[in-house]
Length: 236
Image (tube, rainbow, N blue to C red; front, side, top):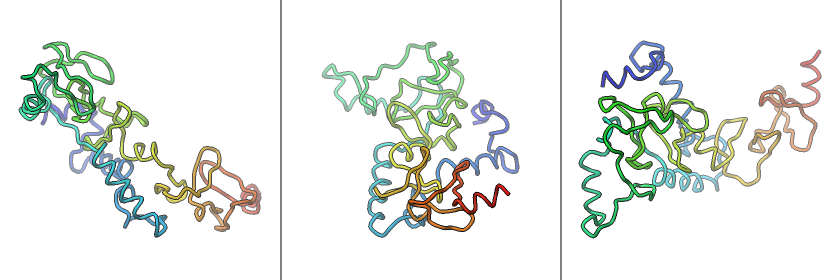
């Protein structure tokens, strides 16, 4: 465990009372917001959208969510993976498959490479495996990052999609729009869009006076909306 911890940048090591512990808490809130997981934590859901979100969460838990495993190169999955290989019919001459359907063949000793940086990995150096990626792929602990934001995956929690690991926030956003106003995923098909951003219609409102802006003149600055009146006042 200590050897693994030493491979993480010092300012990200989650040691109690340190900047690393604060970083971990902040990343948990950022990468895994509770309102992406539990409909009861959402303020933006209409009554008919609760079931849509429940199905969304159920689907990603079944198909994408995983937790990375720390092991030495070649030891990912342990005996569990060996047992799986026997069950898939090796006696019949079939090659085992990974969880993403690719044929699996472990690298020869000494030829392990990090999937992100492509650098060689010593056999005595702990690495991260993601079972949904299959055990032919491994990562340096500091290289196990979200493919969208490049931030380290907090507590090694990942979402697997399109051959890559995502943090929870960006995985959800790859499937549904996120409201710029409340930060929650939008499950309605009737929502507002502007300059590449999205809002629940009830949140497409002036930051200052809360006037709904659908069909009205507005200004947009770094995600903040203002009606024409408040925008002029701000410039004065």
